[in-house]
Length: 293
Ligand SMILES: [Zn+2]
Ligand SMILES: [Zn+2]
Image 1 (cartoon, rainbow, N blue to C red):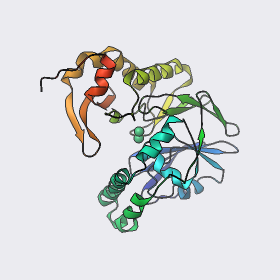
Image 2: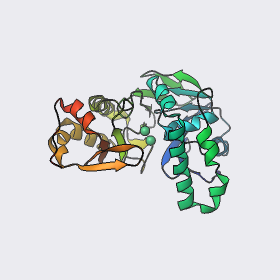
Image 3: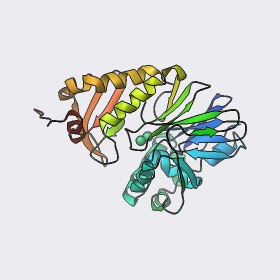
């Protein structure tokens, strides 16, 4: 029997693949080889995800992070050793502050209030906000094309900057599965707010084109948020959007704001749903953006 907890829900997708969803919003994937397993992303870590993993497998588990945002990285504290692309170690540490942790803690409380009110008391949100990853992690930096051999299964690192500077995906060529993090999602994703945390649009476009070139090795795309699996059509939509559609239509975009995270505009095209600032758009267009509203 697979465990469930106040925050985590796990589902078997195949003999070698499980999805563990935290707080109804972040998908972490457990991929099993013969000798080892990989956990793709660790979630917020409101609880220790290892209790779920242990109900699925006894294999040693390596934690690989697609990127360093809190909803993927805070749970790293339960592992210590992490495999990720170098720039996103900075991303993890940049987000490991009290205000950011308080925001994440409040989101956890909100999830319980709405979904499992009897569990609110069990979650020590204050202690969660006080934690720090600074001395808790041992990073191992991975490079584009690097292979993880799990025994009878190999996963390949695909470097895909955009949503963050060090974003990576993992490709299982034998099963034609891509674990796409926050770069390919059926979900509203903050791609480019005013910060150094998001890479320029042009880098994201290059990443989507790179994934498109791997098309023959990909059928199912497992993302960190929203419905799964999704298909290469999502990648086509990103490429179409950023190859001209966005540049032509951004003036029709509506203002958008999220408390705490900031404000900007939201662009929707087919399955693409991006939240961005004009500063990042101007960088992409190479000229000033004048809006009537
Ligand atoms: Zn993210
Ligand atoms: Zn995310």
